[in-house]
Figure 1 (cartoon, rainbow, N blue to C red):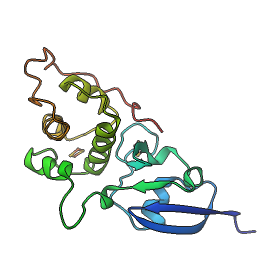
Figure 2 (figure 1 turned 120 degrees about the horizontal axis):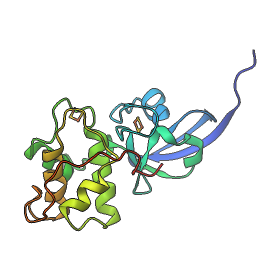
Figure 3 (figure 1 turned 45 degrees about the horizontal axis):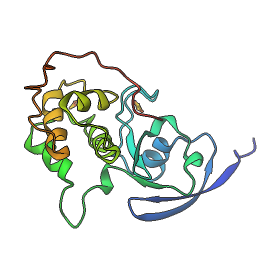
Figure 4 (figure 1 turned 60 degrees about the vertical axis):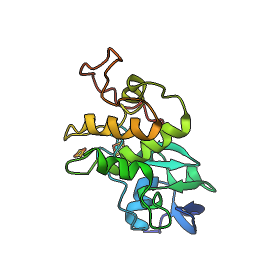
Length: 180
Ligand code: FES
Ligand code: FES
């Protein structure tokens, strides 16, 4: 049997240049986890439905299970491992701790990377916006109140509890709002 064809791939990941040869079918998530030992990004569903694999590509959040690594050639990738700087946690990492925003922690790297992307996008103005724009990240532990408070705290959106928004109801999760 002949070896599968490989293609040249250059990525800057968490500030470090990587040059490699990779099979066309390897997803960005599998490249990070299985080839580069960056296991912070999690494989929840592998189908673009849970957001556990969310990373940043050129500052934009993306489900890394839904893109082939070769499609991101030349891009800058940031994973949860790359968010802390100079020995200091990223403000969102600290806010998740301060607001009790996780239980098992499985969804947390994706939640935090997604929140970084949300803040980069600059579209969230209210607590309801945060709910909607984070809805592609599912938390099976149900840590949503803490997650919402943490994201709102860093995004500078008042309250984080939904008071005054007329919007403190339980909302249906709408998977797939994180673009792939
Ligand atoms: Fe990628 Fe679930 S593992 S969206
Ligand atoms: Fe367990 Fe979110 S903290 S899935």
